[in-house]
Length: 244
Image (cartoon, rainbow, N blue to C red; front, side, top):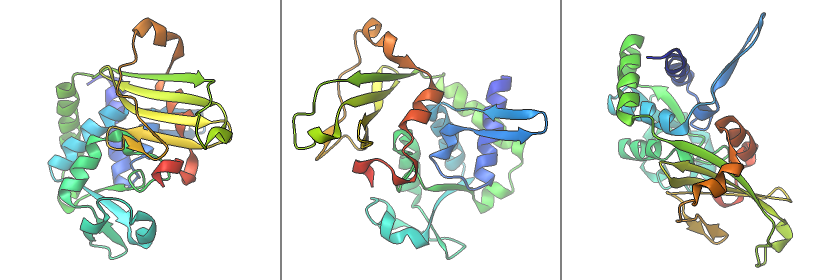
């Protein structure tokens, strides 16, 4: 495993031990040392999904939510199937719902029920030594064969042409995985944000494109890196308007 992959796996495992929320995993972390700040990540969301999914399949993880947020979580499709965790202040997602959620990293948005799901070690996982976690992560990354993720930011000057014209001009952000749009985020001048992915393709505000972003050379001037994408689509605690 390369030093970069080793750092990624170690930090991802540490996030699990800390019971981090899904939206935090791709963002990475930083260590404030006396010698300066050490940055870890950001990480490819698809790679985060591959590793977490493989650990979940082994039974080493549970996906958990704070029961005090029941009202806010009520719109989540998985909420009605949660069960009381070992700590009665929390509820565990059904195993099938947990596996499905990990398949769609485009849903891990700050301020949304899905993005705020916590990933924790299970009772089984607590007894598993770290080398086993690392070996399973390496296997999942190898199997994934480093799928091609690309990120784009493209301004759009035309008005929406509907009752929401007052939002102003829009900047579109796209996460493209293996040539297919995985996530589309729209940021408007007045601060309104919309977010779509292959799990939430359409609503009363609009829809995610089903067309590939071609020709490729036309989109290349709009390419950005993962760190920029993560930073600029982050809406903080309030989340996108259409995912609250």
